[in-house]
Image 1 (cartoon, rainbow, N blue to C red):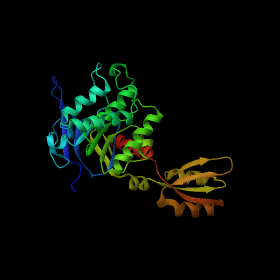
Image 2: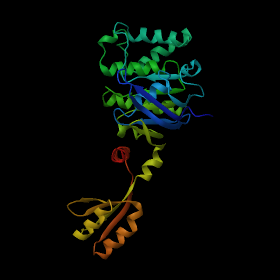
Image 3: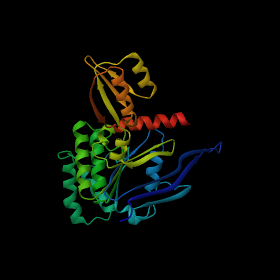
Image 4: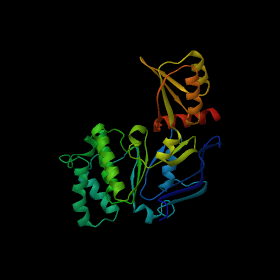
Length: 310
């Protein structure tokens, strides 16, 4: 089965109307998302995420490189009919109701009238909008509009979901519901590509992560492998002499002093040397165990390193 999303050496520049100078939004970006994966698309504000999403949706065209979505060029109607899209900011007509909006979009999607008639109440219930389906959207809260947007994206039973900050404006219960819906979609073999700033939440269900900054790809790959590579080893000791504090700090170790002991976090490659030196210095090594990196730690480290390299 071909990848659901393919970017190969994609570059996109914006040119100022007056100066004519180019601003690079994407620079030689390449990645793939396999069918059935939940992929988190991450980056600081201004990293190029929106440009990338607009390109794969066919709203923008790359200056160079190749993009394929479900095996078709971006914007191809054969791909668009199988994509559900949730933008960060919605522009739903405020005088429509949820029911009318979903009926309107079912016609746009070419959905059979009988299928739409049964699917719309199900989606309204999933979006927890029962009792509000005949209320004008202009009177909805931000969270209600967000849930309605997700319901609209699911209307055509898409094979690929492209979500830009899908939990924005939702309370904790709403974020949990979105997470559970995404896991349910994954179990059905759907592909989910989502941009999010909620790294702790994304870590719970993403299979793959792509991180970009200033239009350049910083890393991409299976999340579990990336977190394992960024992990450290924790060494718990009863005390830490000043000379050992200096030795470990110079080698990038993090030192956390507690009331009863000291925890030293070191790179796995340094653990043997660190333990031997601690023993030689008279420290009692209480325990040693691996500590997995968090997605937030990985993200901040990569972005910081990229900033220093510029």
